[in-house]
Length: 238
Image 1 (cartoon, rainbow, N blue to C red):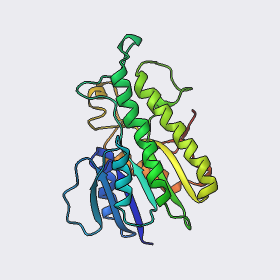
Image 2 (tube, rainbow, N blue to C red):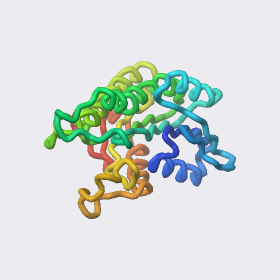
Image 3 (cartoon, rainbow, N blue to C red):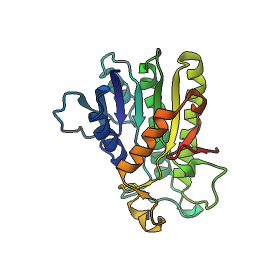
């Protein structure tokens, strides 16, 4: 089968791991890779495009650049936990309006815009999947430690957006599956400041996380649509 794959956030650790995998997959005809910095590649089935998920016009233009192809799998591997100016909040006193809005813009609003413009491109005659990288800390019922106000809240919002997408797609594209995925703690820039707190054996390489997530994607059914699934297939309660 000739599959068309979209990967948004293709220059990130997990996004790039998906790109490298699909380049070797003989069932894939086209990989449309989106990021703020294009991938330098001459591979015949990889096309790289610019996207800024904080700008609606950029997301709309990115979707148009696919030029009418119908998509089998969309993977959104974007997200922010910290930056040079943003640190996860340890206490109420650390809450900052500018940082909060930035986290929500990237972790919740951006994925919502991606859904608006890319979900209509999914195939309708066969199973298709759109997956968004989320986080276990977005689960309200699983929150035992507190802190990380903006990141937790933005991932909770993303999980709700995914649920909404799934409900609408039951009417408009019943074979489509929408997932929020928890990739585990991955050795990447996002986890860099916190790796010393990760239990031995639980820090994944991007390739290992991709392998586990791919298994979840490939085995997902319509009954999973709208859920937050962990890398091992566990359904994480909201």
